[in-house]
Length: 244
Image (cartoon, rainbow, N blue to C red; front, side):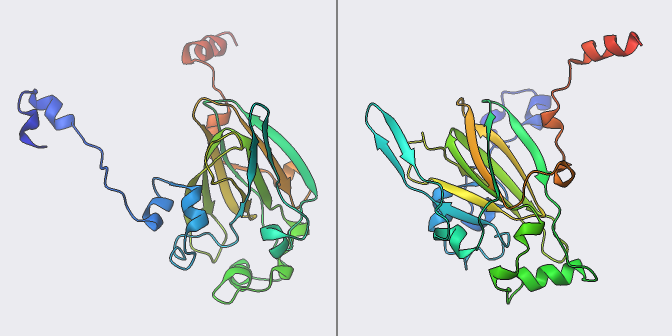
């Protein structure tokens, strides 16, 4: 540490650390501290090739505000836009509310691999240097998510866990329709990509999401999701354990 701290005790000086305020590149921040959706929407995908998870897409949205009344925003139109290009149309739509200060641990859905096919080779076929047409993606046999936020801001983390593909991490902020920004977007998450989210700020978040398959509890995998379990205070648990 610098000489600014000479008046502190040695034990305190030894424990000091300082935050690094230097901004890294977009690629560096995408996999570490995180980025805003506006940066991703404007980014050159070629330049982010080493950090972008194959199959992940952002769906740009326009939100129209009416003074003294509220706001209106579309999600997607069948056969148009990003989801149209992906030939992806959800079979089920649902909503979820996350209270301010809460988070959802990493969820993951099992990807489909054809019988007698090596998983690594299959994913290289779908998403490798010469990706297959989107018509070959088995949307009906694995759960892809298309998520939108109509209220509150949320930080999302994605981790690619599919065999044969590099383990990449994407970390970014999704803004709700009530945000004053101009970076509203939904996100497309492939099966085999773990995803976690936590509310950013003091406003409850409301999510509307579509899935390529209908809900199946057997296809809802959990990784590092203790944040959802709300453990009792340790002294309460100790008392309960002693009462057995």
